[in-house]
Length: 265
Image: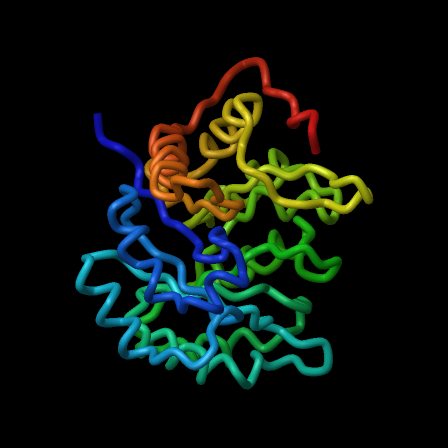
């Protein structure tokens, strides 16, 4: 049986440990866990050398995705974020094949021709992700964006963050039905509320997996899927291997009876 490719976002190991130890310190752990891709996190970088990170990742034959908190579209301008070009260059220096950013403040009169020109001959594939904000985390904005760039054949894919939809009370299942054809990378995390009522990411429970499989059923089979929830425990390698195995085994399903949204959200 072929296992589906799994990525690990380094934010899963905790912001403080990653900032303190450096992202290169987690490359071996990702490699031996069974994952095939590592997701570097720009917001967790301190004084790390991108070229050294590139060498470390390449030495373990991992695919590399570079994640940036950059918003593709800013509220005060119709042209792409002026920092996009430099961010793409940092992704190249890190050896990444993909750059993930947030959609930001997209409007239908945004200058897509300028985006197309900026991406011409880029070696890094741009992916836009639904985040947790009102302006960048709602289904309709992504539907309009991808309809427009598809008509113009602009090379941008989607990172579908399953958990983030809940911050704006959007249905992940509805999002998958409308956006699944554009998805190239999936962020998985279960979501619950803490004692203060705040939404937080948690590892999946058994009840989450059928719903996640239903989402994948609207997407290209075998998509890379990422762990973006806490990986913690006395035996961190065993914890990580177990979660990688769960996502690797997860396959898309189309069932007559739709699974309910997980009750703990």
